[in-house]
Image 1 (cartoon, rainbow, N blue to C red):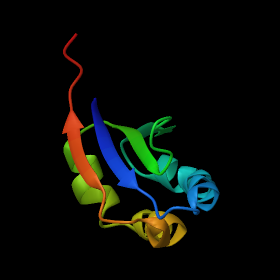
Image 2: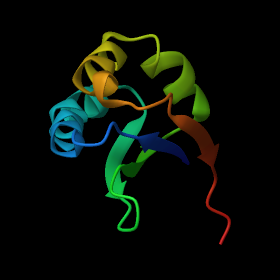
Image 3: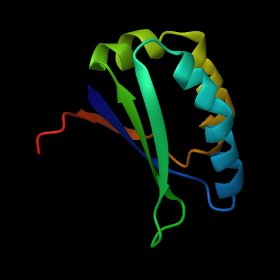
Image 4: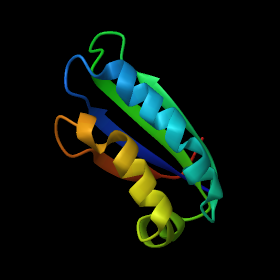
Length: 96
């Protein structure tokens, strides 16, 4: 199991719409092969800064299966207009 971390900066004033867009996208993620759930975290110090954590069976489930699927288009359609810049994305394994 791997965790996708996506750091996302949102256009100021669109935070509520972004959060609603993530919630509207939840089912699209969960329909995707290899997805085991997601969480959205919001910075207290910088309210336009969010981190999306998605649990995937493998990096390939995220990068090859999800990104090439209609569910990715649902995600981008629900939230992409709120991005101030492209998200910074990386994957990790839990080691401790």
